[in-house]
Length: 493
Figure 1 (tube, helix red, strand yellow):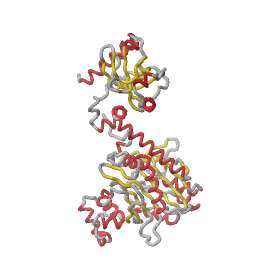
Figure 2 (cartoon, helix red, strand yellow):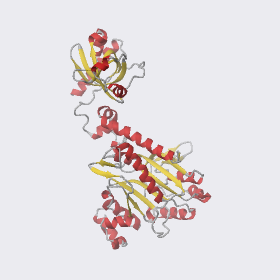
Figure 3 (cartoon, one colour):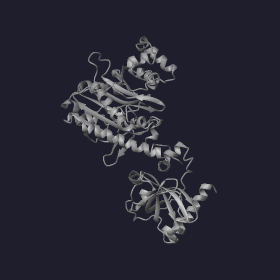
Figure 4 (cartoon, helix red, strand yellow):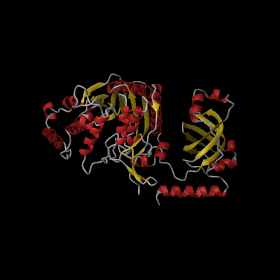
């Protein structure tokens, strides 16, 4: 029997004995306790003499994280959702019966302690227990304090244990929550309406990706988990909502990596009577606000690199980036054969029917994107990789579109919206005609979206921001799995 199995066996036997002694392992009469953070905020500045004059007793509930026994007394650290506080338990204070019960407690148990505050000889703020009781019995041991969980996959699978043991992990997800609040506050304060659009859709649209398929029994039809909410949000522009945003989940049935999870969070917003250039300035403003609140300024470290989010940010066209950063000669960009040879030399498999714009973006992904560490807007994407974007008035072969890159990865995608139903219908038809039998997206034209455009959509621009990647940036996290509470993993067994 392994050491862990032996500990679990001992704990189960201890739990059985407690129940025989009529001690509830999972009582439900614990009232809302004070938080350790509140106690520290109020009394951390008190010295020993000042604490003696505080008449109040404080009731805490939390998990035992450390336990040192000394015969008739013990010290323990109690952890709740806000932090830790030391408690001192003495037999002559809590009574012989309660102390005998306390001796059966283990590290990891949830307990309740009530008592007054004092400082130990080494100056640590401590609760002197007057009463103590069991709240929840832990049947499995926590990882050893100083080594924790070393295997990252176990950390992701057992996130509940990871959160117990690692204060920095808890901080990441508190920061994530605050970032999402900032996003909502920013858009609502600028007159945007938060909306909810369908997550199950009958036609895949708004992006190019392999969808998850499900089936609705009552309707007798297949549905797809949405890969993007874009086409529904633009219907709302038609309906008269000039500023809308949605924070929600998207689903793409594709690979898993440090940058990709099949279920991820996106912010998409659409604004009438602006262009993609206006959204560049709004994006700078939004990210600066997040940086000021989360990092205390627009200059901060990410993965040992100093990031500077102070506006204005660098702006380059896709062609300029390929020439200047990717070191691709301009003449090669105009020659399909040269593009294909470059990509094959880089190990990129090609079908042979890719549009020139697709070849450009494949080269960009390999040669340019990893080098875009500081915030950079890349604009003027080719028409054939931007089926929903408005074409540039001066050069109809490119679109009024940008993607934002920070830290060597794409963070956002935006463009002035195509609102001409005739052109959009043609774009959809070309997109469908260019797909092969094995392509990822079912070839189906969204006739209702065309009908909505025919009713009339105002000139507008829209943007999608990858929230998980934003959180990675502002929490100094190298992997998307570090900022998703329960990332998708293969079955354990």
